Length: 121
Ligand code: HEC
Image 1: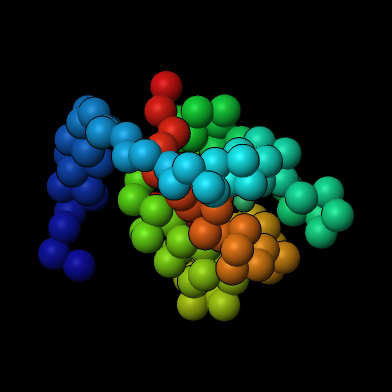
Image 2: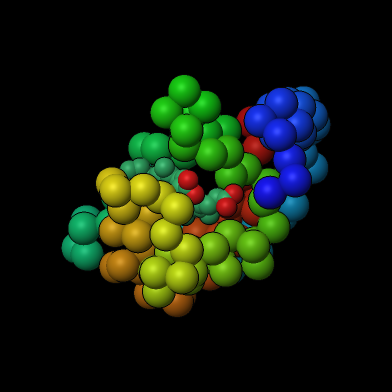
């Protein structure tokens, strides 16, 4: 509440100018994580993450699709579970992330979160 609109712009610009240090995906989760990220799951109608978050997880700023590349796996997994339970609901009326995660199981979340943590351009 204490931040002005200008403060928010400044902080966002600062973080956008930083470079990320990618982590490393767990070896045994790479294959499953990559399929989830790049193709989704046709059987359960889960859209490919790459369709919105970009092939290298770089995001699409004009569409307000956030960058994910290199983010810690634990953070990604916790956010996916929060969207799934509805605890996180700031994806607006489109409910993009709540509908994507509604059909993700815990194993898919773990794999795709690990994969994203090792993504970089
Ligand atoms: C139809 C477009 C779309 C698809 C497909 C999609 N996302 Fe998202 N995602 C979004 C949008 C929009 C947001 C921003 C929501 C918000 O404002 O918090 C988001 C936010 C996120 C966040 C929160 C980022 C943060 O910094 O807190 C994570 C994590 C995420 N998506 C992961 C995924 C994963 C993993 C997949 C694939 C299983 C996926 N997304 C598929 C549109 C999409």
